[in-house]
Every structure is written in C-alpha cells, then in structure tokens.
Length: 518
Image (cartoon, rainbow, N blue to C red; front, side):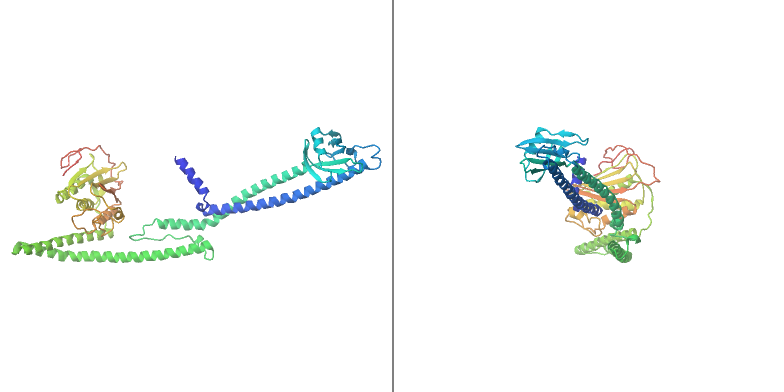
C-alpha cells in the first residue's frame, strides 16, 4: 500500500511541473529547448539532403533515358531492335524495358557483374501500367524501389528506364541515424553540463534556504535568542538577483535580531518589576493577615464584621498565593540553580496526592505506582510544587465526584513519567494551545468552582523546563491527561519496572502499588 501511494505521489508530481524543484524545472526547460533545436536542425538537414539526392537521381534517370533512347531508336535501331541494356554508359542496377503493343520486351536489370537479370512477371505488369508522359515515378519492385520513366518512341513503342533508389534511401537512413545518435549524445552531455552549471548557480539559493530553515526552527517566542545565523558571504553579492535576495535576507535577520534583543530587554524589565513588586507586597500582605487574625482573636465583632473580616483574610491569603507564584516564576525565569539530588518519585507523588485529597474530599483519588523505586535527579521541592499544581488544577476545574487518577512509571530508557488523569468534562480544544501561557484561564472550558490566577500550569511548565523535562496535555470529553516527563540522568542506575498491582492501602508498602485512596 505504501509503495502504491508512493508511486501515485511520484506520478502526481511528474504530471504537475509546478510542484518540481526550480533546478529540475530549469534543467527540463533547457532539455526541451535543446530537443526542439535538434529536431529543427535535423528536419532542415534531412530536407536539404533529400532534395539534393532526389534531384541528382532525377537528373541521372533523365540522362539514362536519353542515352538508352538514342541507342535503341538511333540509326540502325529500327532495322534490328537492340537490347536497351547494351547502351553505352549503362550503370549497374539500371532497369530497361520496351513496351510494344502492351507486351513488355527486353525487361531486365544490369547486374553489378555485367550480366542481365530478368524481371518477374509481376514487375513487368507494374512497368506496363506506367504513364507514358515521361513523368518520373517511384515504384516498389521485387528487387527494391526504383525511379522509373516511360517515354513514347516514334515507332509507337514505349521505352522504360529506371535507376534504383536504394543508395538514396540508405544515405537518408544513415543521415537520420547519425542525427539521432549525435543529438542524443549532445543532449546527454549538455544535460549533464547544464545540471552541473544550474546546480552551481542555484547553490546560493540553497544556502539561503538552509539559513531560513535554521531560523524557522529557532525558539523565538520567549527568552534570550542568539540570532547569529546569517547567509554566507559567498551568497551575498549585491547587483545579482540571488545576491540581492541574500543581502536583503541578512538585513531582515539583523532587524529581527535587534527586535528580539529589544523584546528581551523589555521582558527582563517586566520580570524584574514583577519580582521587585512581589517582594515588596509580601510585607504588607503579612501585616494585613496578622492584624486581621489579631482582630478576630481580641476584638468583639458583629456577625457582619466577622464576615467582612473573614473576607479580608481570604483575599489576603489569595493575594499571598499569587505573590508566591509570581516570585517562583521570577526565580525560574532568572535561571536560579536547582537543588538537585536523587529522589524516589513514588513517595513524592503519594505525598502530593495525599495533600490535595484533604482539600478536595469530594473527588475520588487513586494512584498507580510500580513496585521498583523510580529514581530521578531533581529539586524535590519544585517537583512537588508541579505535582500539587496539576492535582489542584484537576480538583478546581472538575465537578465533585470526578475521579482523578495519578500514575507513576519509568520507561526502559530511564525516563520518569507521571500522569494525572481525570474523567471530567474535558478541555476546550481552542484553549489547549494556550493552556500553559501565563494568566490564561478558561473557566468555560471546564466546570470550575474556585477562582484561578492562571499561573499554575505556567509554573508547572517552567519547573519542567528547568529540569530539562516536559509537560503535555491530551483531552477529550471524559478523559483529560497531563503528562510530566523527566529525562534520565547518567548518574542514576537503570531502574527496572515490575508489574503493577492494586491495593486499597493508603500508605506505601514495599512491593505493592496503591490503586485507590479516596
């Protein structure tokens, strides 16, 4: 099936020249023009040679007819009829015959050995049907093609003279063969030479395409970008078409590089401002929380006052969480070194699930872990924060009664994988492309019961990027899965995976895997 599809695709490309490479189209166009030129030259050469040779044989037949007529009907010819082939200067292959009263006499050909070769009755019949107007006529006889001429004599007889066309036909055939062979050889040589020349001429465009491809694969959307790739000097020659394109492309890259540097400086200013503002906000927020707690403990308040003070406390806590999130993102953006050490991912994940289960008791929580430890090299505090964000996200944006399943595994190459899945309504496909962007919220995509700052998943992505890992999401109604992947480290021993088992024990028991803790 794949071979059939490949052949169909190749056939489709061949029948649509617009989809060919420019180099291929130029070579094809050059070959087509050369083929037309060869065909025209060959046609002119063949026509000229054919006219010349046919004129020569026409002249020769006329001369032979005159000589034969003088010999056959000359002085003494009427008294004693002579064989026309005995005329002087008769060349080998000449045909002579006399038609008298509808009967062919002396019909023969002078063989190369000088002997007479008689014609067949079928040939004689063809000669008897010739027009007697002295017109030159081509006929196909048993001995080959002949140019014949029939002339009426004074005594009423018809003298027929002819010369073979084999030499003319062979000459024209050799000419055609020579032109075809020479044309094919010339087309092959010129095609190879033209391909080399066109390839060399197109090399600057290929270099330009290679540079454009490299730039297309650079991550230009965020962070500091070193846009140092440029079109080589060999492809930048102002004054030529390709050189102008290369020069303009380099100028465009310079402009883009300056714009990226300006964007990076602006981002750094914003991040520094956010980090500074977050640091400054921590103190007043702490004071607000302290004074509200002090008021609640020491002052008698009316019911409405208690409600209002409780809301102040709730909002200050919410702002504190936002400030902490902003500070964490600022630290991750600055690329602060991680506190890396070897950690067993299984108990870390179980602790995170246990923490979120307490705050979301109306959800069903389950976890699946392998029998063997899943060792990773990470900053356990940040990795646990990423797990808590994913689990809290599942609790916030799904209705009560939703099952949230967490799975820990390790692949054969040592990559550690954590999956957080739920059977909630799913995520709107239009929101999936921006789900990890900062401050992106889509409460319409999933039924939410609590407000969100839109930073949780951004923090998860930043933490995974700092660990050279990744986070991805797949979603459809009834199944949404976030997947964390941590790459293997050369300092860790390879971990083997054992079959998964199920138990309802909420604690970690060696050799077993927890399946449900709800």
